[in-house]
Length: 168
Image (cartoon, rainbow, N blue to C red; front, side):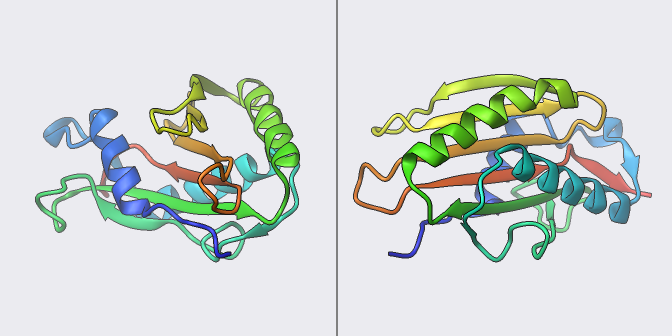
């Protein structure tokens, strides 16, 4: 059975709005290439913290790269931009994925991440979700362990995304 993959644009867009993106004149300026590289680096680091080797979707590091998107859902061409990378890890059992989530939660704070949520999401299955912000880079993650209780293959879905910025 092929794993489900949430759309990065939707997830990152919702999280961007929750994070207060789209700040107009107060939006910081950054080089888009540098932001893309930073998100890719953080994606690799987060994936490595799980210590799980399994199958991954094509967007996973190191093959996949972050996508440039608008922070303004009403204006795709708006000046406030964001880089996001979304992928899934699957092909291993729930015991392995659960240990991977525990390793990730434990590994984030020593690497400069502030965990803002580590617990069940609002779905009927109450999947474990970890949300965190890297204190130095303001990169954010949303990681959800979908246990497959609904008959789908168990997987961990990652979204790593930058804070909103304007191109220099």
